[in-house]
Amino acid sequence: MIWRQKIGFRLLAYIVLFSTAVTLISSATQLYLDYRNQVRSIEARLDDIEESYADSLAAGLWSIDSEQLRLQVEGIVRLPDMRAAEVRELVRNDTRPLVITAGRRQEHAVISREIPLIHAGRDGSERIGTFYIEGTLDEVYDRLIDAALVILVSQGVMTFLVSLFTLFIFHRLVTRHLADIARFFRSHDLRISSPTLELNRPGPPLGDELDHMVDAINTMSGDLYTANCELSGLNTNLERDLALRAAKEQELRQTVRELERANAELDRFAYVASHDLQEPLRTITSFAQLLERKYKGKLDSEACEYIEFTVTAAKRMHALINDLLVYSRINANGTPFGPASTEAACAAAIDNLHQAIAESGAEISVGPLPEVQGDEAQLVQVFQNLLGNAIKFHRPGQTPHVRIEAQRIDDRWRFSVADDGIGITSEHGDIFEIFRRLHTIAEFPGTGVGLAICKSIILHHQGEIWYESAAGIGSTFYFTLS
Ligand code: ADP
Image (cartoon, rainbow, N blue to C red; front, side):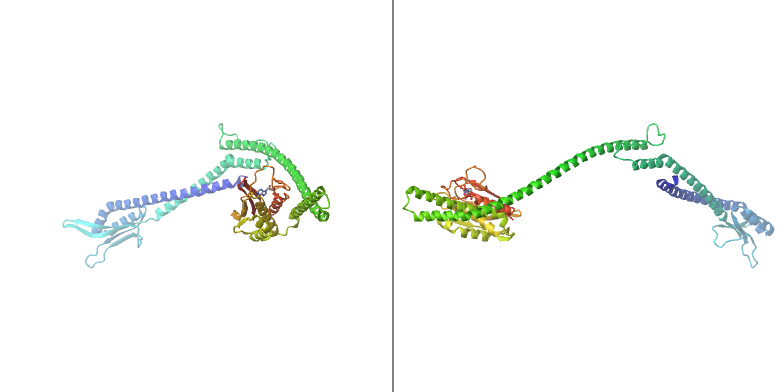
């Protein structure tokens, strides 16, 4: 179990690495200091030898007592850390100099010394030879290697034991509890009130970080359970709301479908009715007109008046039916939308109204008009109805002035048809409603369908239509197209 702890092993690796580095640095320092001390002590020994032996060696050499010299030189070599010693007589005359050597000299000695051997006679001092001593570091190195081995082995063993102990303590104090916490979370179920987390440990009297963590986990677990309960409640409500909403949407879709069907039926009914009414109406109108022409002067004035009422009413009904027919065809018979020139549509409308324009003397100015997406024939109808009203509802005795223009606003075109006519004063309902009129037939002729046709066409083009007006000053009708 303890061997599977990854954190523990990382800790172990860090301890081993760190203590190895510390051991190496401290051992190297220690060994270097030892080395320096030992070299110094060898040099001190050379000093001692020089002091103690120089005179007696000089005396031995002066008296050429080679036996005594040998004994002394061999004695010196036996001293610790001495490798070689040699006494060499100075070359005098042609005789061979005396040389006594003990040990084996090295070519590049690390520690050596050459001491002149001086004989002090009555005539003064004289150099008679040279005393050479050479130390060795071999034993120093051996001793240092031994010391290094001892340090490394003891430190290694100590580091290993301390690491194992640390790993064990870390496991007891931390990692086994972390594993318990992980187990607790794995088995934790938000939907049920789980038992509280408790660690198997005596725990310090005042509580430590682990105790604080356990407290925090238990609080969090309780909070999560409460939040989950609330969320479940909200979810249930939401699901109920969604189901209700879906049912409502379904209902709405059904209503829209029914409305669309009813609308289509209504359009068809209006179309069929107005279409089928045309024929008998034409017969009534023709016969009434025939009566009027044939019996004019033969019938009394009352009968003539009745016939005239009949003809006027039949003509009015004819106009109403015609407008109704146009109105009922807007959504059904519109051609697919494409690029449509509003300039051409406006020009066609002016052309269609040339008689009314000529009779009223209306002055019409048209600004540059754009190309839009739509049904050009329907747009002719819109311009014609608005321009027709602008001319029709002029102030008595005044020449009507009409201005038609278009302005780009955001991604749409806003068209305006402005007149200086009587203006719209009454608040009697929406003038865009079918058959809504603010004047009597005697005041201004009309069917009350023109603006309804405009609104239907503009809505069919996904646009908007509205007006601004001031009584006695004039009205401006606006509509938008893309
Ligand atoms: P009609 O023109 O056949 O009466 P419309 O639907 O075109 O029917 O117009 C509805 C009513 O709106 C008109 O009867 C009139 O009272 C008012 N109206 C429309 N255009 C104007 C205008 N330019 N100036 C004043 N009143 C207007």
